[in-house]
Image (cartoon, rainbow, N blue to C red; front, side, top):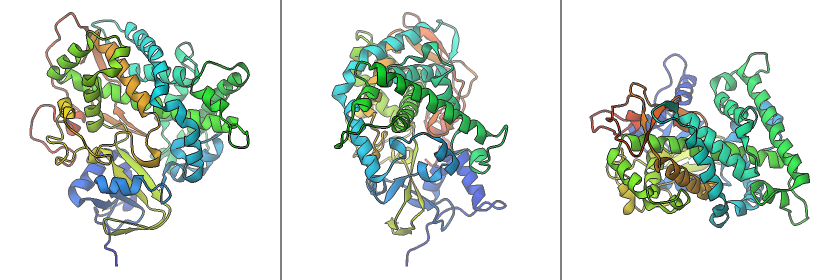
Length: 467
């Protein structure tokens, strides 16, 4: 007979729902507590069969590689009415044969050899964004990086630049991310009534689908130089059939949202961590100084820096799957229908694999060689991020473009914290000041906020989310 999974007791007054609310409010902190208090397998509550958390490389491998037993969670968790409103779904939401067929269609556009043609566009758009900054004047880093990565995604994926029409695609994407599919106000009150977040989300989904559909329609007749959208338009199955407009809209929505939000959060975290670690910043500045922005894509120093940021602050700290058949994990029976959560955030803090796991130490990557399931910023298994090569290229060119001209310093007195919705990003606004490379930087002022819980910035003694 299987042992019940360990876990915390239900909330004193609200029962299991209280625990679920605490997890939704701060998934990173709740998950870290479970790992710290209950070990490699834990329920949302003690004995839970509806939501179980598993930690460590072996559990990552078991859950993330078995796509037939563990399905992606979005299509199960999103309210049915929202699923009906959307014109199509994308790779992140698909499972089984449909996912394998769709991934086969999209993969050629994301192979590393296909990425090189985007370098010049990325460098140009990054330079335009940096040109908009005024030296010595504060600006919101998170807003700047979101605006830039959204422009890059739109331009490189389907040949559209939203710079002159930010009220359309860009604004809609940000509205959809802000409303959040899984917010309590939507999950527990899914009613299409005036003034409700649920109605606002339905309206945003419709408008975004219509905006992308209009782009698809224009491109079907006009054509365009090779990019992701054109490769999807040109694709044919063995019967000569192409993707429908609804299928194209579904793929573009997913790739656009995931493609720009993950990069923008990682760029923001990287620039913030460098600003708080001056010796590491000096090393990066010296490395990029004599490179063109496009040459920064080959920088070993930037590569190590990004790897360390993704280790400490992965944009998707947790990955959830739904067990569609019974399973056994860590000696515990997992029933069909149970949501199984793995954690990159916990995995990347294993001191046996990463000494001083809470310190920002890019130099560790000169020798570190973790296994596939010990370090997985882009996931693993059949749903591994298809855009990893593009994200790598994009972030190195953007960082090189910025750091060849400026060092960014946070405005004193503003806490730096996390915000976890679909992804984990700095909670905005995050005001920073661009200081030209030719001048001296101001002193490094200590920062407050959640970042201190996730990264050991000052070597002080405190409990940091389970470590």
